[in-house]
Length: 274
Ligand SMILES: [Zn+2]
Image (cartoon, rainbow, N blue to C red; front, side, top):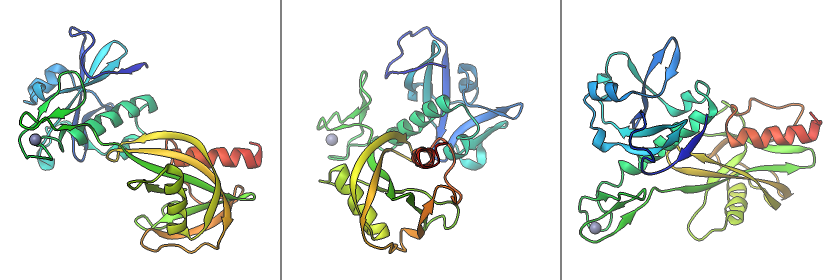
């Protein structure tokens, strides 16, 4: 499967595959139990959706992938279709395809929050070449928002700091994460988040990797860091628990595909030699 992103269709005559987006998830059918993420041109027409609202995402194996934001009432989803949350799709569709659907979610977020100018309130127009809207009255431009968030595996000798989120207490233990604030470097975000949430100071932050996180518009930037000082003291508004774990006695950790899991897996592999 090869996906190449673009804003306009490279080949206007190519077959179009539609991803129908709703604020609650992807509107899709199941085919023999498997999620069929794409709708055809005929299905889009049968559903009465406006193809003029479509946004090109790119080219997938020669076909043009297009997304249409829909406002279907959740109780009036057409027969045979359901609304599937992006998180629930993670284990159901191919990881490469999951990335394409994630892009559609991010485009949906931008398309449905940039209809009016944030400066003067006029109705905006879509740019023909770039992924942005422009205000015809004051020329203000709105690009999709991308919110950087740092995610960090903190090490202390052979142990790693993992925490359970206050919103999902006890569901699983994961690495610490937080959004960058205005004026911060990623290193400053990392140090502040770890100290605020878990009460410890860290040093030697090292870049690990990154992952788009379309919930609804983040970019997770992964690091490892070393404990410098302090005992764990959690912020109960953010965390329900945090502990130093050994690689051989892990709690329930996040599911595959997340960068949190990749950080943990890489650390476990290094410690255990597995
Ligand atoms: Zn304006």
